[in-house]
Image (cartoon, rainbow, N blue to C red; front, side, top):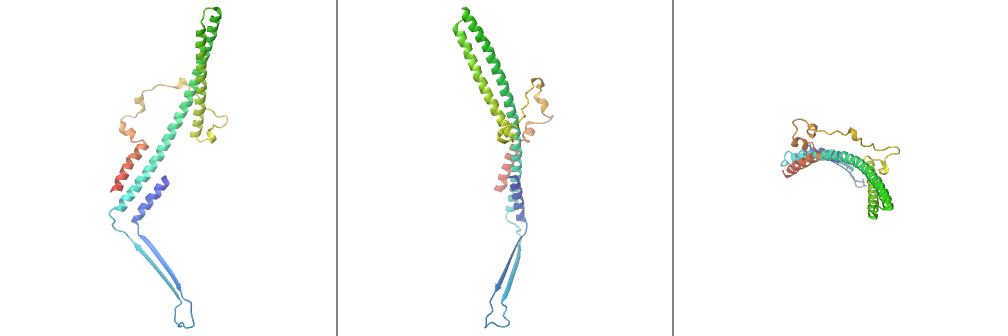
Length: 227
């Protein structure tokens, strides 16, 4: 798309150049017995002309400007696609980490409730516990098992999506490759204000967004086309 927009700019600028046209012809008449000796049986014709438009109501000026805006929009669109891809990869990686943590939580929850179920069974046999306590913990164990299955499914989907975004065939990571885990000790909280350069305003930060650049250029392109 960007290449096409570049050629569009060249095409629009070409309207400012002279237009050359050339024609050629060849006529042949077969000689007969009645033809004159001086009769020219073959005729060649050629013509070349050049045309230069001096003024067309500023159409060429604004059409060329619109083509340049179109090129800028396509470039911004490409940059925005890269931005979205990078954001998607980051989100997919975080989804993998979240699914892993959910698996750990579900396993811990299931193990805890299994121990509680065992104790409740022992109390029931000793006559100091109720059957409802046993059933309650049994239900919690089953609920934790369901959560574990869902977390494993989320992990598989996140890994497929991560591999697809990275461009691996069949949305699968190469054999032997795994996604690094999240080390909680390396996570450090920081002041959000420290990540913004001094003097930067919201307008300055938004001006770097390629999708907003594209929208702004689209307005200028529309105005050029109207003019």
